Length: 118
Image 1 (spheres, rainbow, N blue to C red):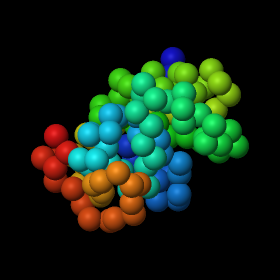
Image 2: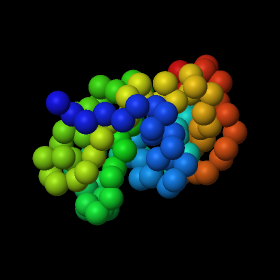
Image 3: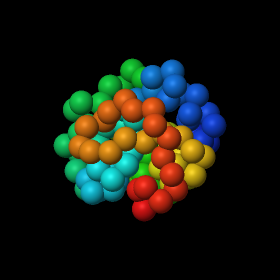
């Protein structure tokens, strides 16, 4: 079983500066992502491994939880303290939490609406 973190716990970890890895494709990421999340599409995840620290938790997020579970399993097999974010970016947005758009992680605090990234 892949470890999951619920949205409320993730929001608290995010506010405290958690490392967030978004494994959706680049178009999904560009359309709206959790502020500060690094983009590493699931097919390209092996290329991102060298830049991921093993000394802190990695919170893996996708749209709804499927791809993040796959990525979390891989990262854990390679020695990372990874956990999948339950409900993914869709649940983050549905809760009214902020997103940013574009290719950069960003730090915006503007709340998203449910239709912005779908």
